[in-house]
Image 1: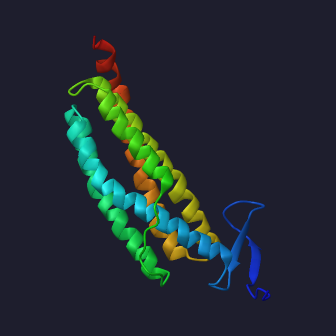
Image 2 (image 1 turned 180 degrees about the vertical axis):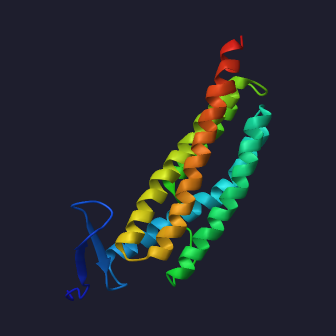
Length: 191
């Protein structure tokens, strides 16, 4: 077995007292490989969402929810492009790896559509639930990836991933507002 020649230097970070900022000086690290695999995973997820969001838009009743889904479809296409830019910055081939977690969340969303009545606020409540599960998965993924990018000394990559992270948080907050201000109460009134 060959000895690893990866060098890791640690220094105190200015951002948080007591934390360490790791800088990897070799691009062959196991951490970098893990990072790239996780990028492939979220890339698959985002590309799959580009196909799924129009189905959710069609199934929604509320004009506000339809608009939120339509807007997020545009943002998701930008997220795909941004990930492609990240692959380029890393000198990695653009590739997708099936995201089992996202596939499961999307299947759950499809079953909500099947199990609820078309044209009802109750279906919209279910669609919001499904969409927020997607957002929460994306928030945790992009948050972790941005931190790993900083750890790997890839600040340009971290900046791109943080931009997407913030957009996913905004989408989640928008969905919460739609649910709290209208849809949940409309569903409560349905027979």
